[in-house]
Structures are given as C-alpha cells and as structure tokens.
Image (cartoon, rainbow, N blue to C red; front, side):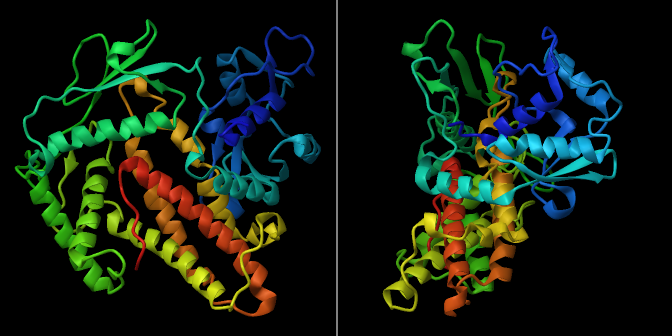
Length: 440
C-alpha cells in the first residue's frame, strides 16, 4: 500500500480529467505513474476546511491543459470549464465511489475554483489504523535492492567537540544528522563512500557552495539579532542562554513539573537543546539563522511545541490512571469505535489537515535535493502548526471531562486520536533530534 495516499488521490483526479496524447479513446485509462505536484490547479487545505473544502480545483480548463501538456496528456473533454454544471460535478462524485477516499460533494468557490469535500469516515479509519499499526514507520516507504542510493557526507574540518563547537559548525553538524534521518523516510538508500555505485547520488553538507562533482547542501551562518554580524556564542553558551529562557517561561506558565524526569536543571537543559534546534532550523538551512537574545523567536518556539507534547502524554497517562482506578472501562479495540464521532470539524482538521498529510510532507522535504535544498524548515513549521491546532483542540474538547456513561464512546474515539497525534508528533520531533517531554 502506498504510504502517501494523497499522491494516489491526486493521480485519480488527474486521470478523471486527462488522458495520454497517443490514446484515441477518451475512456482509455492513463498508464501507471506517480503524480505529486500539480501547482495551483490542485490545492490541499488544512485550515477552514468546512468553507474552502478539503481540497480545491482550478475551474478553468486551460490551466489544466497547460499542466496536462507537460505530462504529455490532453483533457478528455474540450470545454472552458472543467465541471461546468451540477451534472458534471455529480458525475465526478459518483466516479470517486471506487476510490480509497471517495468524494462527498463539490461546491463552487470564488476565484474560479471548486471546493471538494471528502467522505470523512474512510479517511479517519485509514489514518488511525495506519498511524497506530505502523507506529514509528508511519510515512516510511519500503526500500528494496532497486532503491536509488545516496552518499551523504559532512564537509567540515573542526577540532572543536561537544558543547565548545561554534554555533555555525553546530548548525552544519545538525543539518547533516537531520538529513540522514530524513533519508530513512525517503526512497533513498544511504551508502558509505566506499560502497558508492556508478549512479549513486552524492551530497555534501557544507558551509559554502563548491563546484565539485557532488551536490552541495549549504548551511548558512548564525547571526546576532540587531547588528546581523556573526555571533561569537559557542554551543554551551547558547544552550545556557536558551535553557534560562525555558526556565523563565516555565515559571511564568507555572505548568512544568520535573516529577519523574530528574532535576529541574535536567529538564530545562532538554528544553534548551530543543530551543536551539528550532532556532537554527525554523528558517531555510542556507539562510542566516538569528540567535534569540530576549527569549522570543519568530515561531511559537520549542517551549510551546514541547508543552503540547507533554499535554498529549498527560492525557494518555491520566486516562490510564482512570482505567486502573475503575472509573473507565479499558479502551475497546479500534474496530469497535464509532468513527463518526471524529467527523466533527476540529477532529477532522487534526486527522485530515495534519496526520494524513504527514507522509506527503516527509516525501516533499527532499524533493529539491538535486538543487541543493532540503526542507527542514518545513518540518519545523509543520510541528509548530500541529502544536497550535492541538492546543486549540485541547482547550475546546476537554477530552477527559466527559465521564457520563453515554459519553464514553466520545472519550474512547478521541483517545485514539490523541494516541495518533502523539505518535506523529514524536516521529517529527525525532527527525529533528528533539526528545519529547512527559509532564506539564
């Protein structure tokens, strides 16, 4: 099964509208291919889904024809608009019934677009089963002897080790480590230099671009916030600074407790290490990163992300405690859960907007590697946004407040969702080398 079902959905939609140039019959199917990037003609949404649709299509046929031409295809029906009337829209909905994710309805949007709404239950079932059964392998493609090979090397010569390394060198080292972890979630098979094949793709992570026979992935400088000059901070100085920021924010929030995690200093150090990673990679890797002097970065930051990570752990731990105390029955098997409960808009945004799209995100991070680009900042942005959506969900849903017997199916369904969100967030954090925390 394709670990990225959105790719399959994109292909199915494209096949409904287009056919290969050499095929005479308008009913002939397209040969198997992998369609992933459609530009503005096909846009997946993760906000305002009720109004904007789960995804939207460009209505003007010539936009699709331009895209189809690049795929050596032609539109099946000559017309100015793709779906000019209600009958054509119903035809697409009916046609989608055989798809893994069938459509529920199609609405006309402003700006010459159609809003497509998916049937929610098949998506919910697929996401929860995939995330919880595959666990740490969710979004990881299967590799074989035919997988393309990559040799990834670190181009750095420094005598500094451990915490005494300069921040720019540390950023370079961490970019290399993150890319190695991302390669595990990509079709690439990593090989060492001595095991390179003739067609092995060679990548060097370096501090500046060179003209050698490999692709250079450049790690940019680390600058001071006001003068924009190179920072003189080494890693241990910056870790101490960011750990202090984390301590002050934790005291202000009065929510972080070190119980079960050792001393408060140990916890604050872990938070400080996470903050450094977020600071260095919330911008593109080749762009200058700015050190944080006042405790506030341009994103919500590591404290916000890990605070919500800890909320997930707390919810699951609290539920287990209530089960042990006899207040709740044990969690039933997923097959016995009424998934219609999770068709609510807030549940749906988490499931469709973030959990389902995670494999697509992982696939996209190394799409432009041949141009020397790796989308680590997109992973940081995803984690930041997921934490924000879950925070709103946590405030509004009050998952464990509902203890009446008739409301228990709601609790059980949402506990499965909490487990899935925790799993995906932990995978994403692990790719950045960040440890989640367990207590708030």
